[in-house]
Image 1 (cartoon, rainbow over the protein chains, first blue to last red):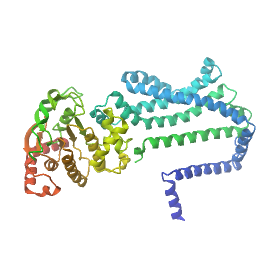
Image 2 (image 1 turned 180 degrees about the horizontal axis):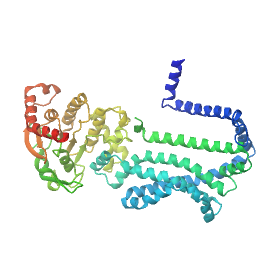
Image 3 (image 1 turned 45 degrees about the vertical axis):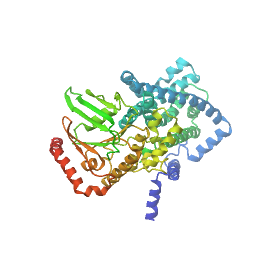
Length: 265
Length: 269
């Protein structure tokens, strides 16, 4: 019994895809069991928390009556526009900061301040400026998601290994070749880790944006379910967002490993 | 041996001085009045205690650092920055971790403007030369330290430099691997007929490999003596046990012993 258990732990500790899937399934099952026990013993008030199967039912209902797809379309369009903007603009600003010490020193403090400010608090203001449409949502999501990309891009570009730069210079590489063959490839896995964080922040950003001004979207659905005390539907949408966050994180982690296999040693 | 080394001078170092300014505005004299020549096909080593500026000198010859005064000539050209007539093998891992073996060997050629496919085809000869056939698609982190240094050597040879500069290329390897790499370097050198200038702090390495050993003294680095190594070639590891070899190592050791001890004391302070 004991040796079976320790070999199972050893399996979970491995770096293979199967171990990863088992780990995730295992933690989801644990969460569901805990949740089920909680709702059947301590928290029996359905306004506060409902058992897992009711959430599933609520999700299926939303899928059947088509509201889920309306909300998904609205949220995905907003993310589909703003996430790429956040990524590319973030990389661009990071490049600019890394290329010039003066720019970095001048803009750095403002960016740090903006990074720490809860951008979502400004959401009502953006809506007042840009109206209730897509534009204000894009602005909120981009501002929430862009900073990790800026920071990791700049840090990654500055981190490039001194011996590698010296080797490239020794082969008479020009500035562009130094960038394209050393600095940028070296920074790429850093940037992807920033994009991974940006994805999670992007999901938070879109929900908040939809709280304030919209008539569809996951954030809108969560808000209206909350206002009608429909706890099951509220949790169903939160779980969908959780799954999106998890899938994005898995994807970008895999991409990081693929881009920098030498860092796993 | 006389037929291998031509009279043509590939490298001329004329009265090179190097003075660094520290962040606290103090001047440190790193190199004083360094002059020597290397003939085509010759294998020359520079040995010296740490702090003798030998690594700085190699970077001046490569064009990575500008000398405070003096000049370096490679062939008929004055060195003014890195160039394809020189290639450097670095001590530390300087392979691009995201490039596989053949892409790393091709790196210098690609920087010179060669197309990727051509460069990799041209590199396969050097892959063979350093005996890494079958490893072309491996990445540096999948290779041993010795194999990585062989890639490093191949990458430098691939640009067909007039002179190969080696900065303590085997210092990071364990002693057994180092012995093997020394023999391999000799056989590569004999096949490629290159000119090599090597920096090392291992006296036996310098004697085993070289036609001539230049001994540096430290602080400031200056040439103390030049010793011609007249051991027969081709050399194998057994030569290290001959009396002639031991005598040469001993002679060089006596020249730098005081300084090595002095630098030990200094680092203990």
